[in-house]
Image 1 (tube, rainbow, N blue to C red):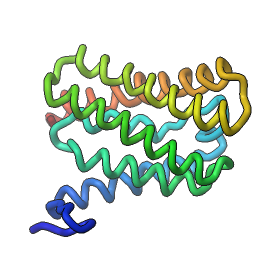
Image 2 (tube, one colour):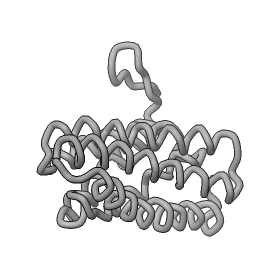
Image 3 (cartoon, rainbow, N blue to C red):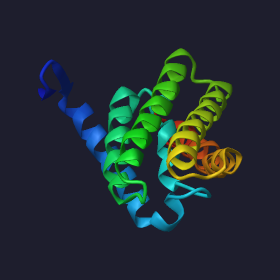
Length: 172
C-alpha cells in the first residue's frame, strides 16, 4: 500500500510508519530531556537515533523521521525558527551520511566512520550556524560544546544501539 505524502512523493505504509515512530521518539526524547538538549554544552540523547539510517531495516524512511522529529522538537528551542531549520538540515545531512555509508558496507569500521562523520556534520551546522552566528557564542566554544555531546550521543550511544540491534537482535 502506498501513501502520497506530498505531490509526487510516495512512501509505502511500512516506511511511513517507521518514519512516524522515529519522528515521535526523537521529538519525545529531546523534549523530555530539554535541559540537556539545547545550548552550547548539550548531550542530545535523541541523536543516538541518527545512526539508524545505516541499517537497511530503517533506511531512508528513518532520515525523514529524524528530520521531522527534529523540527517538532526544536519548536521548544530557545533559538526558535533558526534551530528548527538548521537542526532539521543537520539531522537530514547526518542521516544521509549514515545511509550512504551503510548502503556500501555493514562493517564495524563503516559504522564508526558514519558515526564520526555524523558528529562532524552536526557539530559544524549546529555549532556554527545556530550557536555561533545566531547565539553569539565564540566559535570554538560552540563547536566543541556540540562536538563533545555528539560524541557521547552518536559515537557511543548510537553505535552501541546499532550494534545491539544488528548483533543482538539480528536486525540488519
